[in-house]
Length: 309
Image (cartoon, rainbow, N blue to C red):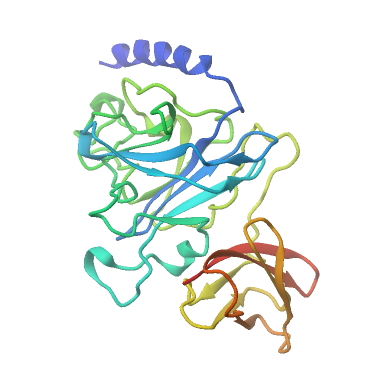
């Protein structure tokens, strides 16, 4: 069995190497957390922004080959990321409609698939193949193996063909997966098997703090390092009234609201000079996603997203 897999691996590696490196979007992070805490991060390994019009995320459920697809929109910046999160935001609901954690919502560039009966793509579990594709069906990246049901999850167990048949540790269920820095392109052909340990690092369930940045060897200029000393979150998020609160890890000097094109909508000084600040939304401001630039007392700043409903 192991010899067969080794031969297949060599063949598959040769197929994958044909794909151009650092030229096309791929999936850089996969979050299959508790309840509805599900997210995908798309990485742009090029020096130019990429418009997501013409791209889609697709789910192939439980070893099936029926595509559940959702079209994407937005811009992925050069050497940057775009985060999709399941659209479950009502904190009063329970069970299958339990709200996504606020920490994960704060990382979202877009929310997808609020109603399972309308679009099932973002309801993936550990046994679903998930792909990034062009609208014409061309694969740009694949997590899992389309058409294979691994059990509850794919594993790193060679003897079991990377399924959980022999009790191997789950990798695609109840985990966060992050693409290794040396990966420069997606899997563009449905693989003969899926070994998650080949290209992914595994983190515990509900780990969200690596979203919105990705280390990749395609980027020659810098390595982004997450600094928990400079962070913030919003509540409520989405914003359903006229105000929301920014809570930060350091003293906030001022906050700037921007649209998705980076144009300034409003600037506000923090009168209290504390680590929290109440932001009032102009009723003329458009509904949807806006960016919030938080400037700390030492002039450092971070940018996060908030949703206005």
